[in-house]
Image 1 (tube, rainbow, N blue to C red):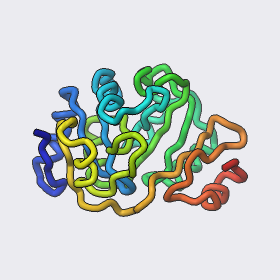
Image 2 (image 1 turned 90 degrees about the vertical axis):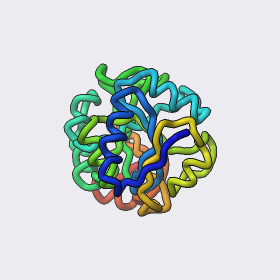
Image 3 (image 1 turned 30 degrees about the vertical axis):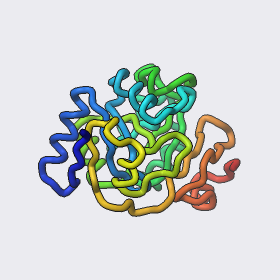
Image 4 (image 1 turned 90 degrees about the horizontal axis):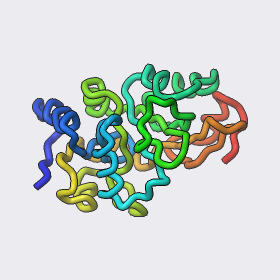
Length: 209
């Protein structure tokens, strides 16, 4: 049976990091939704996420990070506009689609050549990622279902198919991250979420939505 641990428990951070390093899959909090993730370089664990969710392999996972430096290694190019977005909205609910570098595992890219980056502001996630590095993740629900805004909702979806649930209480926001594809010119908003189009256009100019 999957264990549910409070983010406030001093042992939870270490246990979660050990599970990930040993090839496990965990449910963790962000400021927008609860996510299910594995270490970016663990191909078998990433494939397990797809199986758990019933997710199509043509939908790549987001790379969740705690340091902007990871984007330099995992993407081919960072424009001035991308840099401005990161400096303005990270950490926070903005997912940025970039062209993946050869350092990104194929299992995380799925069938494409792009990859999404996200830097959640949730403290537990940031502390965890600081220990283990980038985490490939998606929302902790079954594909097509409502995003889980509390740990209990994630458990109702995934039950004992994961190795650990980290309960941080209800999320701060009730909407998912905004997703912007910066490989296009002009950039395109793929999903409007917690950050509005007008907020983004104030930073980088006109975008398609």
